[in-house]
Image (cartoon, rainbow, N blue to C red):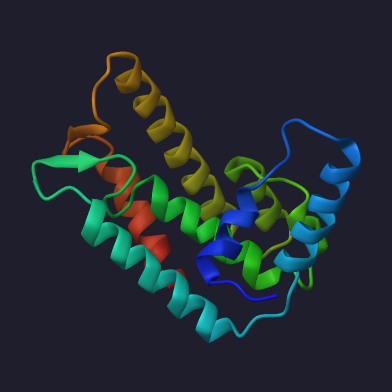
Amino acid sequence: ESAWTWEHQALVRARVVAGCPRTADKFEAIRRNVICLTRDEDSLRQDVREMRQRMQEALGNKDPSRFHLKQDPGGIVDIEFMVQYGVLRWAFRHGELTRFTDNVRLLETLAALNLMPAQDAGLLREAYLAYRSAVHRLALRKEKPLVDASEFRELRDGVRAIREKWF
């Protein structure tokens, strides 16, 4: 009956992967109802922006010659937070935003509903997939998700520009 905004953000991605079908149905109904709550747009924007700022300060990279694919500005978490914000902002009007839990299809849905410009959704999708691919390659080598700051510069700049428009 009460939860922090970040807990609602987590529900955007939550999904049942195993277990009792009846429990899964109950969970999905609760998830859908919570995601579809009407929210104050300004409060939601501020909560998401502040949580992102706290995460960036605590987990972001401090070396300007390196880019943390997940935590640095223009990275994966920025994309995830924009998707979560969009879902929480508009799901009360567009229940189809509760259908998927993955970022790629949620971006496609936001664009299809004209809630995000298709060009922005396309850039975020491209960046997300490129970053995830790089993270996976680094993880296979047991390396941290850090790359040279010159890598992905154009994508990072694009993600940051879209984030500025949204927040």
